[in-house]
Length: 508
Image 1 (tube, one colour):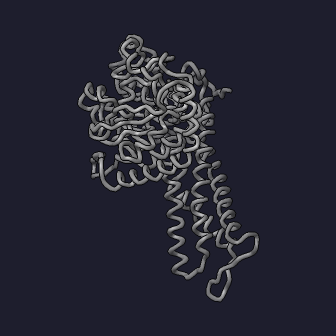
Image 2 (cartoon, one colour; image 1 turned 180 degrees about the vertical axis):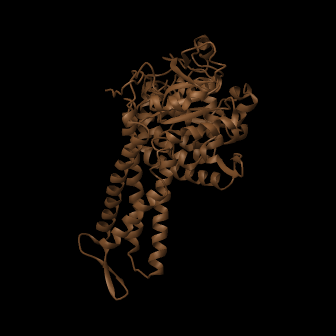
Image 3 (tube, rainbow, N blue to C red; image 1 turned 135 degrees about the vertical axis):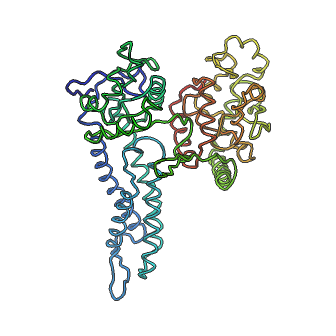
């Protein structure tokens, strides 16, 4: 399934695995601004449908199929009119809060946050308006419409995101990108784009400094992918027109500095391309970055991470509520698993192991036993087969794993007893991987930041490959989470954990 455009070179999808995704040609007619326009139109249509459905459900749940009205002065207003007012305000709020901004579609949590914020603004404003004009609206109808609407809108956006990801595998709905700058900075930007498959960018070429291009290379290789060198810094605007580029990313500090960037912006005014500046501000998430413009000096303010306060108290409250409910609901299934473990091999059902929690304090982590009883005694004989990096020990087809244990590990069922650790306060639902004390002893100074918050039942490591990750990548993901976590990100990690449990990757 390919799309072609005249004089377009063959390109590799950013973020695609060369083993699983073939090369394709990005169709300029459905990329950049055009794909954004078409996609936003689809969202508008389905947003209207979801809001209408939510209001209809709330109306029927409150009044059935009977006609209902509310007094407004000497008049009576039908509830379908009230519903239409709420719906129109809701749709307008979704547009005003830029929930369909192309820069947030298909990746990250910002889109979902804006949908929730737009819904809250809608009902807050309408509640005040109805109070001022003394509109006696049924509170049960009004209150029910909000959660139903937020739920169906979020689900709708998630389904569209899944559809969008599938389309991008075939080269559709992508922005054609030209990366500009010095070679090291260009390679860094391309590698980061490769690493995040949700990004809507396809790199069609790079532009290097003339000095660096003196040997006339025709391409550069990044992460086993080749990208053509299509021009130098002086001819970027002309190349944008020729290749139909939608986005120019300036990597780092190119020759000419701020003067070059300003001139490039002027040259791109007559094109359809947008200008994006890339910073080496690594592992800092968007919510921590704020822009403070000063006359002639745009400042980037980076918030310092905080490891206590209201947000952490709220996280703890959610941990207690969610883990308690999960233990109650899952208790019959947990008893069945316990019986299967006892029937499969002799020994206790549970396995207790000392792990390091917040601040390096140790605790006894509880799991379902997935190995033979003397597994720890047999570890020394298997050290030469270790397939993990750093301080970790992992081997595929570990002979110590029992028959039922392999299934439990594959689907992370062996981790469920850690819900008790969460209730006790040793762990959190989402957090860094809980470390062994001997691992902590070998940590470099910066790796100790993993211990600034409680370890998690799930986390970035679990949804990103688990045992297939290198030690360095595992540490990077944990540190990124520690410094940039949010409740919204936690909810997204939990949701992705369910997907990984059903379709496990790197679990052994």
